[in-house]
Structure formats: C-alpha cells, structure tokens
Image (cartoon, rainbow, N blue to C red; front, side):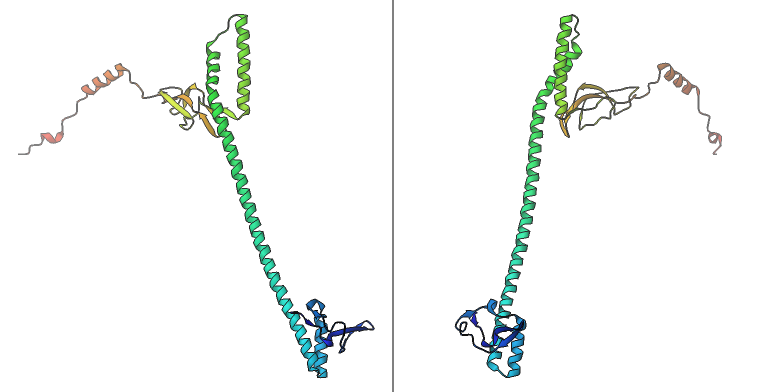
Length: 262
C-alpha cells in the first residue's frame, strides 16, 4: 500500500554524507510512493533514532509506517520467490518426467523397429530356404561330364555362392550338427542308431541343414543321433559252454542232514 513520503525522510547530501531533514518537500507532498521510493533501511533506522531522541512522535510514526511498508514488501517478495522456486522445481520435475517418457518411447520404438525388421527378414529368408536345399541337392546329384555341362554347373554354382554370401551378410548362419551334442532347441532327430565310434547323444548324421538368423531359429537341423555302442553280444558257443559247466558242478550235501535227530 503506497503512502506519502514522510517529511522526516527527505534526504539532502552535505559533504558526501546523508542528513535527515525534517522539511516538507512540496513537490512530493501530494504524490503516493511505494517501497522503491523509500530510502534504504539504514537511513530509516537513523531517522527513527533521531525522531525518538528529539521526541518527534509524528516523525517516529511516519518512520515506523515506512519500515512496515518495506517489511510487507519484503515478505511479499519472499512469498513470490518461494512460489517461483516451487514452480521452477515443479517445472524441472515435469521436464525430467517428459525426458524419461520420451527416452522410454524412443527405446520402445527402436525395439519395435528392430523386431519388425528381424521378423520380416526371417519370414523372407525362411521362404528362400527351399532354394538352398535345391542347390545343395543339385550339387550332390548332378555330375557334369561334357564341357557344356561343366560350364552350366560352374554358372549356377556361382549364383549359389552369391546367394549364400547375401544370406551371410543378412546374419544367417548354419547350425552345427555332426559331432555336436544333440540339442532339441535347434536339432530335430528323425532317427537313432547304434555306433561303435560315436558315443550316445552325439549327432552322427545331418539329413537337412538348419539355419538361424541372429538368435532367431529359422529352421531346425534334421539329424540322426547316436545311441552309443549298445549292449555287448555274447557268441553262441560261449553261452553253450557256460551252461554245460553249470550242469557239471553239483552242490555238496549239507552235513547237517546226516545228523540223527531221534
């Protein structure tokens, strides 16, 4: 609330020092002023002391009123500062939350993009795998004899090599099979056979290649698995000799049976 400048607070500079003059300034007497128009607190305190010492109750009252104005303004500014700081803190919290939400959204979008791309590539490559099987079958079955047949074979083998290089570039890898432990997550067993050389649980033959794209299984490898050497077979002559030996050995009479119990 603005008030008139108290007459006791009109300041005049003499020899570089402030001196309070109890003289009415007619130019400012009718103007309302705010805290910015008041002198510093130090000057107000000096004026208040002087008014008390001089017994000037009016001037003392005016100085008290001016001090109250400044205190009220100080309290208002402190309150506004607290509100602004609270708004700044709230704004910072909102900004941090927005940044976190945006980062989570960016990560989800990137993961979705990678997943979509991987799934799309996987579907396309999976549909191309029969072509790989056809090339492999042709390479095993066709035996070129004439010069023309050899040129044709070289040509399609070059195409197959380029095709394999493209698949390798996309991240397609062949599943290891023969000599590896059987893994049901990547191997599909279509048969089990005894083997004297390969221990049980080891893949002994690959019937169809399997492929993976990164960590995604495109197609399991079709394999045969060894069951080990199997049970030892005893020759027939050995079994007959063992039976005859058993018949020739008769158990001895029990000594206790000859004791007269009468």
